[in-house]
Length: 272
Length: 272
Image 1 (spheres, each protein chain N blue to C red):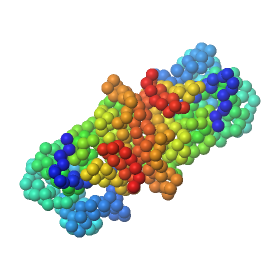
Image 2: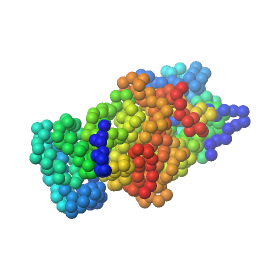
Image 3: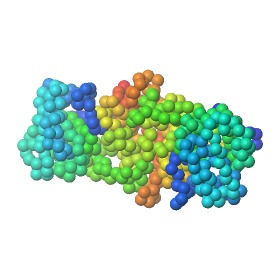
């Protein structure tokens, strides 16, 4: 279940980014995130836990500053003990935006899962704080997170591994570096486990800015591939043996480039 | 225009194969082709023109013999003069099945296009002779053939190059080695030029056996990705600048593994 709406408050934006977002030349996505968080009034908190590079937090801090963010800091959380520290919870609570970096999404879920930091991110988002995540950070925002998949090129019954994510939103499953890494098959496997899921395949340097009403705008240089299985007529998922190519009849497909919009609740794509 | 039906005669099967079809262990596709052509009564003519390997014709001759074909021969056509030779036309006219090998589809179109050999293949198919093609040989069967595309990972206005093919069927556009070579974007570019086209993305070792009523069965170990743009609600194709990511709203998508069927005229997928 996603964190419940708090009475009278609108959930903040949830912003999965497909990885490798432009940071210098035309940092459209990061710039829009900074503006959304308040520009010179923004207080952006970076969670670099997915990354094992020491300078990831500082690097994003510098980028956000250059883009005009009033205040920025990063939380050096690298194990579950760190994720329980009150000082980090306090730092989070003053922020207007949270940015989760790339790396390994299993580090995010194993280190943050169930901790005060995860609970605080959920609570703050429900209260209106915006949460963006890139690459691994994009995977974690949803309730159902892709952790990996086999290298098969057709969707199969065992073609993808799912794990619980942060659950800021629960009806989507996100895959990142989507066309760059040929991930259609594993996203198809994921949505066909349970067609209540909507699949979002995010190309690099491409983001979904999902507002509190679950409608999103596409920002960036690539596209978002939306796989909507809600009208699926047949799936061989339940009968398929391990490795069998799946049959999936009647999926809806949208390719959404910059400026197009999608309503997740209504399952409807349109142009701004 | 596809070759017109001849009164009282049913068009032979048109059988695009996604390349790398199994030849020894479980040669399901080639076996089914031999059976369709009459098994021990089959007379299969191989057109290895796409290939620049000298033994391609002989190699397939051997395979079809091992699969029980009564008679097999291959036409050593490697330039346009060869493609006008009456003896080759005569050899073709006695056959029950024609097999077009892989290689370079531009060799097929530039060498065979408009010649008596191409005309004879079209006429014979209209009279009931089955025509299979693998890889480049699959691309050529349709009226609109993909000859290449850029390496971009999103569909774009200039993301694919089309050329006229043999035109045995005119409403589909075929891409081969589909998931293996991450070709979703170029197939999406192709179908969005003109949504009368239906896109068939054929994985390796996977074939569409398209009967005279334009209904096909999927045979092989992979899947066929069907992109049906007939209900497309918006395409940015006409306005996009070179290299822009396209927006395409409301495409239909089917993933068809072995045993599933699709009616090209009705645009309807189902299970056998």
